[in-house]
Image (tube, rainbow, N blue to C red; front, side, top):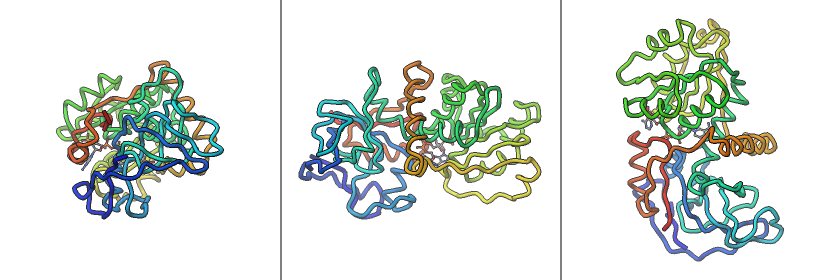
Length: 325
Ligand SMILES: NC(=O)c1ccc[n+]([C@@H]2O[C@H](COP(=O)([O-])OP(=O)(O)OC[C@H]3O[C@@H](n4cnc5c(N)ncnc54)[C@H](OP(=O)(O)O)[C@@H]3O)[C@@H](O)[C@H]2O)c1
């Protein structure tokens, strides 16, 4: 097998494509021949030691991938060689093969595209947990999605629409806003050229959004929180913009608003049954065409550096995929 090995925390340029012994799955493990792996923002952070999960060196990055089961270890019941599966393992995906714990392997329902499967659970799982579980979003409410053309952003937009909410999608370019309109956004705001607060006032007749979905943080957080509606819920999803914002607490008091943390990885570990039920609903919505990953580009696995550069420079629309031929 071959894999992009991270031996030092010096970023993507230090990753090395290495030939490694193909591992035999141990008891409770599954070996997967990887067809596609998607890039998630944490993949950028993890190779610089900036992500909350810090695997021991050396490791293979790539949190989410899909492919075919080649072999299973003792005790593995729910998948068998030849099955098409997705895996959310935190690491291991930027390779030709991976051995992974069986609990992290999901068999695909019939009709589920393998490339979509490599780009699904991380972003849709996060956005479902955020909107359905943490924000308790109701049909008819208004959601503001920041970074709405990105991975978790496009998932949040589609999920909010599937729940009957009104979606205001906000992004940094006209092209990204146009993509959000194509995906069903009711209104868009280009926050590079428009004043976020003024645009939100106009679009909500001064009420503000009931829910703010924020994977960006940085300078967008304060104007977005100042705009929130009475009893609003502000979802803290991530800080792709760089800085972790600090907000004046009186803003929460004045709006009777909640700041709500979202940590999908721990939700999956701490509440496996609730997480499985969420993924089941998402798979059903996928089957009904209500949610569908937006594929930005498919690049050969060899082009990992170009893939990372595209995400770091905010060019990715939806999900970027690395494929093995
Ligand atoms: N809490 C959780 O459980 C959880 C789970 C998954 C991901 N996350 C977090 O969610 C965030 C987004 O992840 P993702 O995989 O969706 O990433 P992504 O596809 O790259 O989307 C991030 C978006 O952030 C915006 N952005 C603003 N400033 C940026 C900058 N300096 N560099 C890069 N992007 C910038 C971009 O939109 P514009 O250009 O339109 O501004 C971009 O589309 C990350 O912080 C990630 O760690 C959290």
